[in-house]
Length: 316
Length: 240
Image (cartoon, rainbow over all chains, first blue to last red; front, side, top):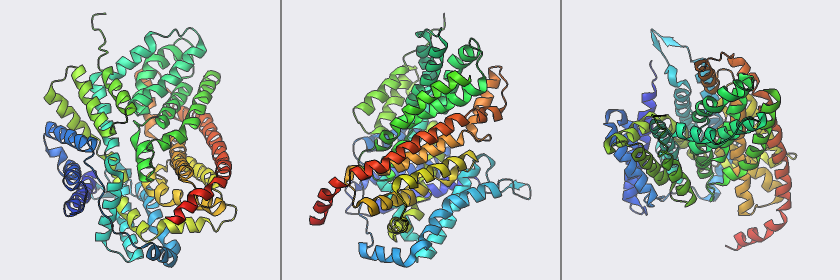
């Protein structure tokens, strides 16, 4: 392939290295050294991570966790435009400001769909396993050029803005990856089997409704623990869905699978373990309460769990 | 049963629950949970470090989605993107935060159901466009919002993006989750058409739209109810 995801890792690594360098040069930064080490280590994981021994990366990850855990990651100084100048720019540029912002999602879709099967010679243009990510990378670069042209500002300023938002996100930017890592460690250690054992060994599922409730709530609870419905599905469907809902009660497996996965998604709406959907957005919107997004989702998720129990019971 | 199930790795789950309950830094909690789980499963220290490192490298695509759009969004914000988004929405007389979000929910869910999941998202859509527009619509109707009300409104913007995405993407046949379900059921000796799994998701998807839309409709009433109390904090803000 020509555009492999490796280029995006390098791009992200360079952006993070610039962020770390800018922090290091910022003499007024309240957490100058610890913050630059934190983002520097993150940059290393992107630049050369796959070539380092995994245990060394693991040690680096633990150092990052310790730095973040003991308050070592701070926010530096940022020189914004004066409020008046910003509002004047907004008036002058108007709807032209929307164009680069909308270009990111629209170009991502266009590139992913339009160039998916394009080959140059015998080489695929886009990394076939990571089409959407590569498309997002291309779209971000094109949008950056558009944004520089529209605003008349420089790529250097864009890097300062990237640093500002990266620092505003702080450890939340690393959390999704840490949780995915934990999911893999849980898998290696057999946590899934242990949870399924507990869920199925002690509940009497002689009533059809009880079995439906156990499956729906089990999917949700397991997802709350693992942060990922995809991890819950094999465990709960293997433990309850296939042997009991299909095997004993002769339910329709397509209905069971579809509603089971949606029940898992209800769990996703409820858990800080699904950080990229729940914690990162709270950080991106600079909300003081990091659980505010989850709190807004609780009533919808609980109502949907009730609906899923009813739907599964009736349709199965 | 000779090969007794090892329940000790569940200590890792307990570590997560306790850590989050104590409000420790989540990064630290997750790292500790990984260590606890590894030791409970009798992994040697070096193998555990390697498992942590390998897992971290294998999942590097996750932060890319957040990191890559930041430079563009930041640069546009510097030049007033959010101010313009707020101003732009206030031109529409009928626009309320709730109606805007119901419209967004509809578009997000239907496009995700057609496989166009990257049309939304938190860094590229919610922060720069949706949140300022919802806030703009609310402010032009009700005046400056108290901090708690504003936080709830912005949280609703993020929640709406999530709900639209989750309950839309899973009724798209070519989505990864459908393939996962199909493959797993095949392994269990059950052959189901992926299309059937997608179709049977539709009742839940419609229910999610109706339930969340009702909540968004009530969000407008919530905003209206809290505008009377809005005068006090905004006066304070003026005095600052």
